Image (cartoon, rainbow, N blue to C red; front, side, top):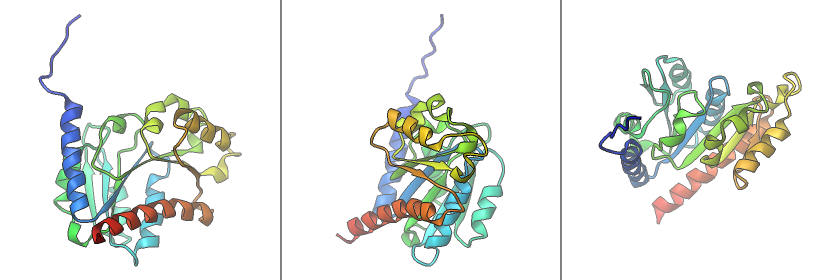
Length: 223
């Protein structure tokens, strides 16, 4: 067995940059959200709902992470908000350095909310902090009600979990309540929201979490 010494800890190096990003965002009073989840979980749609709701109330910017494509970024641009696409190439996650570079293109003095859409994956983003204030994981009922226990770490390290597309749970033979129970078995204290784009009340609950964070950030800035 051969042991290869890398010379430095990749994760520690990332954490240092993430801390720098966080301080930069705090300095400008920007509340940031890292939205993680698999391809098809509905991350983009949930972000769109936040952007549309806050468009006239809070100055919002989006960093849209993807392996190659620019499709999600174009959806956000159509809503009239500053959007920075970040292509990771072969990497299946965003890291703090990529976000640091993207922040150079964000007018932080004129931003209240920064939403970061991570690359579609339930494994790789876990170990890479970005400097965000809120880590959100989105999972869809279409992924099956065993998806939670197959990917425990992302639920253990997130601060909000969303079970999306619950309106079609019966059609795909999935128990959304079991999914919520599985999340709480891994992380008993995490808030869990069951959402559907066709149920405005559930979308309002998701938006409410974001607004609470913005409010706290603004209170801190005013002190």
